[in-house]
Amino acid sequence: MKKAYLLLLVTLLILSCEDKTEASSINLENWSKRIADISTKDSLVYGKSYLSIYSQIYSLSEHKTHNLTVMVSLRNTSDLDTIYIVKAEYYDTHGKSVTNYFDHPIFLAPMETTEIVIDEIDISGGTGSNFIFEWKTPKDCPEPLFEGIMNSTMGQQGLSFATQGKRIK
Image (tube, rainbow, N blue to C red):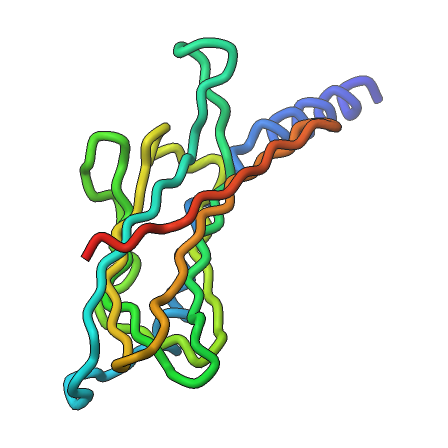
């Protein structure tokens, strides 16, 4: 009987130590449903935006960091026009590309929003990560809005803050 309990205990310990981490969510199905052919669209206005995000922040000192979940929000602010996101490139603290989220233009319908989520366990971006978005809109259409929402909860404590993208071209 003791052997059975010991075997059960060891099995539970092994299962509880199993690594159940997941990679950052890149919803390929979401991007494939949004593929847009803009080669026939003329007179689209080109723009480029920068968004700072933080997958980690310093805590107590420069030698200790705290991981954050990041939600990057891509928003079409037009209530009339469809817009196109041509590129969403994620860079780390040192300016090296981490991920290009899609290799083809995607569309956002009027007032539509889609997200990119970087899981809390994904620290590849570091403390100074950022995005570059390239986009195209019809003439006289409002430009898209890019926001980063960073959060983390531990016990009864929560941390949350936001950043907004800035047009750079």
